[in-house]
Structure formats: structure tokens, C-alpha cells
Image (cartoon, rainbow, N blue to C red; front, side, top):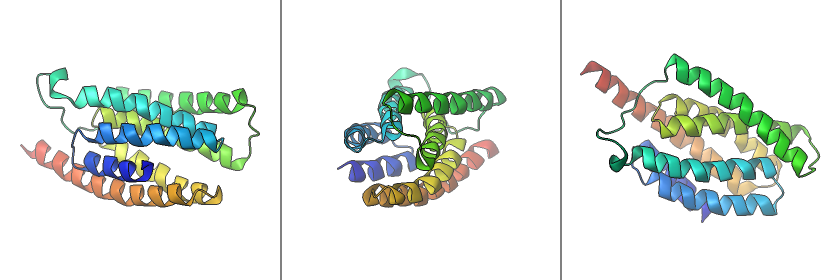
Length: 184
């Protein structure tokens, strides 16, 4: 179920459809449980964050939250600086989560900490409809595919491979929309 709703969520995001958030919420809640059971606490923490960001993004994309539609834009200098801060802050917090659960840190865990920073920032940019979210998702997904395969989580590896393909297609679609909006 997490797999199906996760793919559906990314497809909805690609289409700028607000259903990205409720479908994503279902996927992340199920994934939090599965990752907790597998003792992948960094990934679990990130999926808990995705659940919270799904609620935030749902609100931001909702027409009742503002007078005009939220348009696809590029990040400002301020948003880029905040993104860098979020990236490093997330890596620090994810590291502390591993320490809190007394989980031994090995190379795959450090990779998880790194991708957590990428995905955290990407999710925030997604809620703001910043095109750079797709670049971060692509980078993180490419790293996550072999990581999940190495950990024996074949379905998650396959899911992130599909996420990578969808993220590339979404980036191209959003870029086209952004370019058309800039020409108006």
C-alpha cells in the first residue's frame, strides 16, 4: 500500500495536483511503521517529517489558504540559504536520532543521514512549489535506490527507482510550465 500510494503521490505532484498530499500522507504513515519495524530510524524520522510536511503542503496548495493559486517558481537567494541550513540541520537531527536509539552507525547510516538532508529540503521546496525540489528528489532518489537494495528492502529500492523516473519527468514538466509563465 505504501508503494502504490507513494507512486500515486509523486504522479500527482508531477501534475501539480493537490492529491499529492493526502496520497503522500497515507504512504508516509505506512512507511513510518515499516521502517520502525526494520529499525531504520533515520528513514523513519524522515517519513514522519514527510507526514507533517504533507499536512503543511496540503494547506499551502489549498485554495482556501490564499487568494491566488501558488505558482511554480525558482528559489530565491533567501530560500536557497534556508535550504542549506535545513539540509545541515536535518543531517544533525537525523544523526541524533540514530544516537538516541543507540543504533550503530555504519556507512549506509551516514548515507541515510545525507539523503535525509536532501529529502527534507526537497519536501520543503515542494510545499512552496519551487522547481528545485525536483533536482533534490532526483539526487536523493538516485542515492536511495542502491541503499535500499543493499539493505534488502527491494520494494523500496524499486519504488525509489520509479520515483527517480517520475522526478525527472516532473522536473521537465514543471520547467516547461515555469518557462511558459515567465514568457507571459
